[in-house]
Length: 192
Image (cartoon, rainbow, N blue to C red; front, side, top):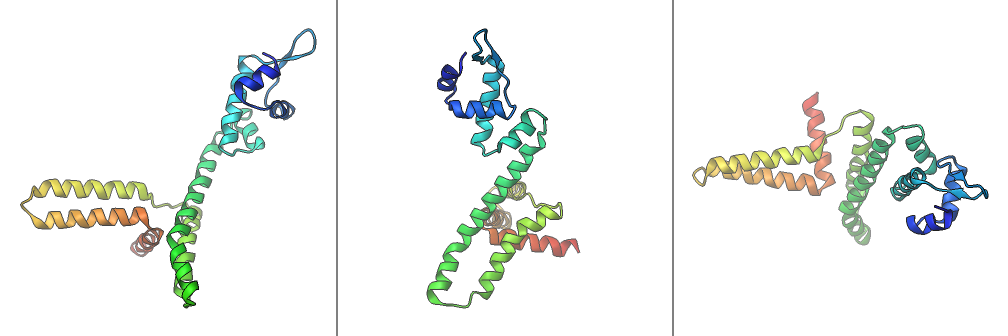
């Protein structure tokens, strides 16, 4: 298959295909007239490159993955995305409070400290090689809540009350970076 047909089929520009060849990611063979011919291997490689580019991997990272087999870059990229998600969720959680303080011209000291703690939580847990897996924590809290609710079977209000509290805690942890900071601080105190 020649570059024009390949470009159309894979929806990759000819310029990009030429760049990937220049960077050593693909090595098409040439026919007897000197035209580059792209076989199944090059097509598959281009599809891999296309997918990695859509996930914002750089060409250097793609080369490390596809040529040098440095697959740990997937975990690094995933961690980068998780940090971005955390930062966005934290910003969303605090944006109304910040706006309110600014509009009312209130003291922002306490809010600023809370926001700093929320953003630093991600850094601390990353650098200390410790992380609270909040998804697992939420899963186990919900599991415990269901078990307690099923144990009560409408007969014991204490089990239902504890179950309800566990569900509320789970949703709070899921929805609020402030609660995550608080949970982390409790963990640090218990650890000492």
